[in-house]
Length: 359
Image 1 (cartoon, rainbow, N blue to C red):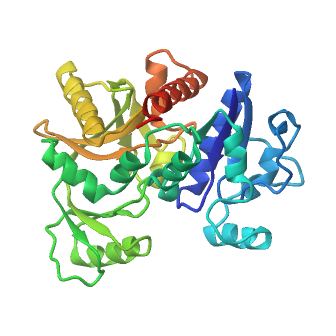
Image 2 (tube, one colour):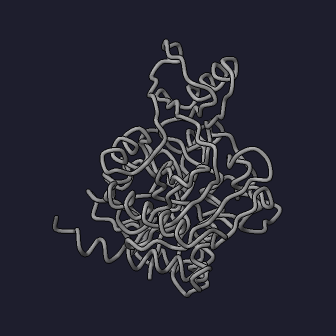
Image 3 (cartoon, rainbow, N blue to C red):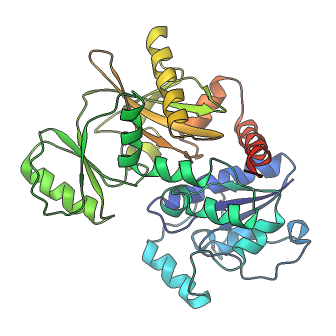
């Protein structure tokens, strides 16, 4: 099968996306597929021909973080660039639209695009909508459910309407809005991922600082009731809940550092909890999945308080595929390797496109 692994972009999660993409690329290559890894923003500068999947091209050399003249060990040895540096690099090549040079042309030649993007345009439905208009098949859910899941306020509105417990919240669109929260509370960006722009605050001074930080990412911010409890996550694939994972950070909460630094958290899969609680978390995961009309797969995050009440925090329609990510752990718990998981996602995504292509 001819597969494009699409990663990178301009999200705050760009570096995570590059690691996810490189892991997926290697796994699919090992399975015998013809695979190209492509930065959605930087694109490919060479000539696009019908036989490009058969040509010997250093695809990692097209991605600046992996572009090293002294040789490189891939994946995982990339250098990190600031988003402004990435933008400046492409200005030399091509300005204008979000898609990099030859991205759409290459994607049209593939059998499917494996979406290894995280955050912003990768998860908010815009790329999915563009691909739908171009007749390009891709992994994951469609543009509408991507947009709903990415917008935390809209997601929570839908959760409330469908009887899914979620923390109460208030939406701010101005850093100086006259709103007095109850402490402790959680300040978070409305459309972020990987816990970027998320702050647990206990005082007014911390609150003001958190607002400044959150509004530096985007202009819609949530102030959410803080739920003290244990953290869990559960992936739903084809409407089936996988084993539940409990997440216990060694310090602080499950933020960006704890998510992607090896050894920063204790992750137990399957979670060592009573069967009854496992079933309630899985039931809530499937219910949230269906309420947002997600197709193929997604990961749902939860907090369970001291009374055993299950709160759904958010849905992630393109969960991480890094060595420390959660969905590979859940797949392993049911006997599926990382390569199995990648091909499973591809298979169900191709089925989705066959079902919905005439709708």
